[in-house]
Image 1 (cartoon, one colour):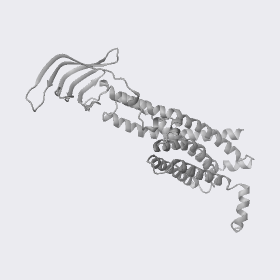
Image 2 (tube, helix red, strand yellow):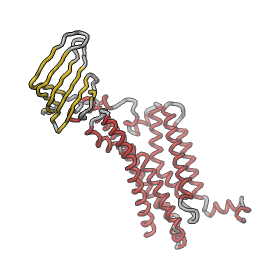
Image 3 (tube, helix red, strand yellow):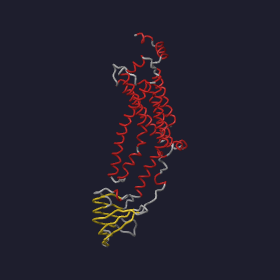
Length: 371
């Protein structure tokens, strides 16, 4: 049917536009946080884009239901404001078409939401942990920032490189504290050097005309050495599963595994994911009657109440998740209470202007209808 295709096309176009805008906003916020960590030396600069792309799953959890909610609200609100919906009803178009379009878009959005929550979300969280932990175990010397003192992940060395160009480094300063009682602190200075790698992916640093100072200020016993070529090897360490898989990190656990765990954090995360899955069709069903507005009232007549209901819903669910993770309340009870209340609210809103409801309202409130 032409009308069905038209409504679907306009709603989907609006949803995709809103989804793109929200993604750009969340992308910018996450990019700022990642760049801040990279500047502080917490993560290498070459991990900025991988971490940003893997973070899409966290953004999609809330963006997908919101984009569908706003897409339906704005599109149907525009139809009512421009009297298009009145013209459709006058031509015999039934309201059931609106529900068919919303159900179709809800199914599509729910498929992406379920895929993200069940598979992509836990997988991306594990991948992010692997990248960060691997960078900590195997710091890339080529990824060091020029002109900054940076502490190595082991915490026993500080390195400063004045200039970095490809694999060539200049003005190198390396200070190493005593790792054991038998070793003394050392300082290495060099004007120029290179960073290479061998077949085993081990990092090799070669410093030209380097000076090595070994000793402490408490004991006047220093050893000064000069090297035409000073070579150091940083061997690659293998990443173990225990390094990136945390026992208490519920974000990395699948939905089926969460159901079997009885810890407060696991139960809170389980019902939070269920909420994200059903939020798309639930809020889409709720927003249909809220988008109906009188052309004289303007487009904002129903937008603000609808957004307020949406915010209350997710603020309640977020609060339930936070308190349930601390063992303060039962997430199952509050999950059914909040979602059941919103479902009943959506049913009431959708049948409020139906013919049986009008007869019932006229029976109990005849004076209001007469006026």
